[in-house]
Structure formats: structure tokens, C-alpha cells
Length: 440
Ligand code: DLL
Image 1 (cartoon, rainbow, N blue to C red):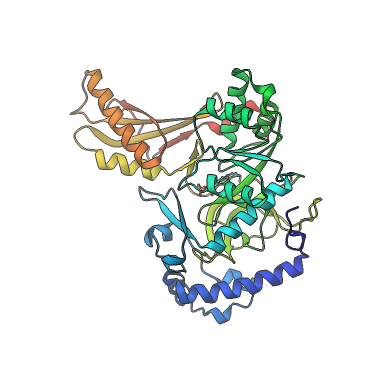
Image 2: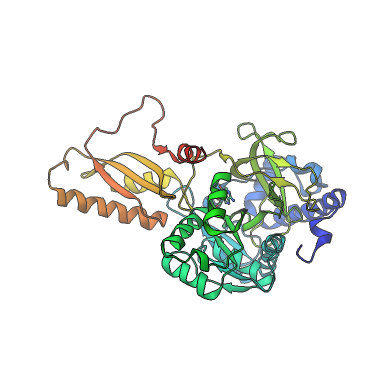
């Protein structure tokens, strides 16, 4: 365990006391400093003095992804910019990304949470941690980096991409712990076998997250890389990776409850659900300084388990998110909202294309496939293949610049996309079906 049994195994009554103290302080601080929060409190007729502890949490107003857009880029920060020493970003529901900021203490706490996971899976300063999550505005690379630094491991900050180089580096530098998305881990496993280097790997464990993955996928990764595969969960709005993590017993992910208070609500009514029920996960950050947030609607659907864990940690466990209560897709580890694609197509629609489109997501050779079918307008419709290809490339480029990943764009004949009488079926995602079939 990381050097803090007193926190990770704190008796639950003590933990609740600590959470209450921190919550009361956080609410008062945010009321003073964050306009959006103050307005919502005022609308509900609430004052910080009405909040005495965790028992009052459900009185507080929710926060939404849309708030980050409305107050873009820094309007929700609770510290002046001179105290913000880093920003990260993630996809918003439209072209604009959402921005989050961290003070020095925030980065330190983040690293602390990630270090707990590394220690839980047996990581020490003897380890070589290959970080193949992207370094950049995405929180994955730097998030894992901070934690690995805390436990004093040797970091291999290779970032994502360039598969052959990843394998060679893993072998030559003696990586013992691999950090990347589960789908990339599987791909790396296959690549290692193809390169004839599977037996040269010294890996013992992997930390995989940022996208949903199944138990079948875990077994496949473990088998291909000869490791134990652990799950890590997080989201930029709350901190990044390390909001929760699996311990050595792998029966749910412990939420760092001294830092985040989770709730499960009914996504339609907003009511808090009884213990153990499945619903939308909501988080309140109680130590964050730069970008604190109260009752943030994650849109991830899961349940919480308060039963004591065999490892001795008292912090609640969440099960693997079972889906989302919005339409966000995670394609090759990148968050994608259909509305982002729609915005691109609308900005280009007119003479050449119509805004009728369909997104098709699937899985081939353990990698997500991503296709967008777009209807040509009748005036553009012609037999000049080169013209069609040119336009496909143009759309593809634009989509890539907004999403950060490539899609195959196919221009299809006018009126060929089936019209629906109700809601348009914009997304066909066959990945769950594939996963179930793989599990047979
Ligand atoms: O994905 C942070 C992260 C990086 C987590 C590296 C783990 C490892 P965002 O880009 O903001 O942040 O995406 C957050 O990804 O709301 C979930 O829907 C999904 N997600 C993250 N981890 C998991 C996981 C990072 N272990 C969104 N299982 C979240 C299932 C996950 N879904």
C-alpha cells in the first residue's frame, strides 16, 4: 500500500467526518469564488451555512459538462491564473474542447491518487513504467507520469503511437509496467507476437483505462502480454486517471474518497438511488483548488459497493462503467460526441453535401473502426471519382482536426441514408455485439 494506510484504510466514520469537513470548506470557498456555483445556490435559496456535512450533499445543485462550455475557458476556476500551473482539455459536445486547471497542490494530490494504484499493484522504485498514454492536453500521459514519479519508478515517457518502437523500447529498456488504453494493449500484444518478441518482454502488469473494456478483453490482454491487467478510471473534469483504481483483488475500483465524494443518481429524476443500485455516477471534489466541482454529472452508469474489501482499504468500490446516459462514444480511447461531427458537416453542407449522415463504429482486429457516411447533394452527385475522393479527403481532414482521430469518410448517393420517422439513428455501434461474440 502507498505510504498512507491511515487514509486508504481509514474507518468509514472517520472518513465521513473528513469528507464533511472538506465539503463544508469547499462549498464556502466556491460560493465566494465561482460565479456559476453561487448563482445555482442562490436559485435554490441555499447558503454555504446550510451545508453541515455529507448528509447535506444532495441539497447542492448539480454541475454539467455544458457549464464548462458556457464558462470556457477559465470561468469556473476558483484560483487566479497565476496559481494555475497546468491545464488539460477533453472533448466537449461540440467543436470546442473543455478546459480544466490545476494548482501545484492539485497536481500533487493527483499524483498521490495514481501512486496509490501503482503501489496497490506492487509497483516500486525497482519498476520501469512505460507510459503509452498520450502526453498532451489529454490527462492520460501526464496523469500516470505524476504517480509513477511519486513511487520513484523509472519512467519511460514514450507517449502513444508508433507500435514497433513501443515494442522495441519495452524490450530494450526492460519495461515492467505498461500504461495505455486496453485496446492499444491488445494491439501491442499482437504486434509483439508478430515481431517475435513476446518472450523478450519483462512486463508483469498493465494499467489500462480511459475507455470501457470487458472481462473477456482483460483475459485476452493478460494472455497476449503475459501480465496482470488492472483497470483505472477517471475523467478530466474531476481530475484525470486515478479517480478510482483496482487493488490486487480486482473486484471493483476503489474511489479515492478522501478526495472525491461519489453518488449514484437516477439520470432522469436526479434522485439519489439506494446503495448498490445502478445509475449515473456523480462526483464532488473536496480537495481541488484550481477547478473544484460540486455534484458533477459524469454520465457514466455504474453502481457502488460499500462492502469491506479483502485488501483492507475502506474506500468504496465502483464497478466497471456499464455505459453512458448520454450519446458520447469512446473511439480508440478518444471521446467523440456525434454533435461534433454534425457541426463539421453542417459547416460544410450546401452545394456539395447534405447534413444527412451516419456514424458506423465497429471492431476489427481488436481496433475500433470508425466510418462516416455522408450524403452528397444532388447538385454535386457525379461520376467523377477523383472529385468524390477529393471531397471525402476534405471532410476527413476537417473531422480529424476537430476530433483528433481519423474516420473513413464515404460520400454516398443523395437520399440513400434511411430516413427515420422518429429520432434519426445517427450512430450504429456494433462493438458490444462483437465483444459478446468474442466471449463465446
Ligand atoms: O479518459 C482519463 C483517463 C486516462 C482514465 C487514462 C484512465 C486512464 P477523459 O478523456 O475526460 O478522461 O474521458 C473520461 O472516459 O467519463 C468514461 O466514460 C471513460 N472512462 C475512463 N476510464 C474508464 C474505464 C480519461 N476504466 C471518460 N472504464 C469517462 C470505462 C472509462 N470507461
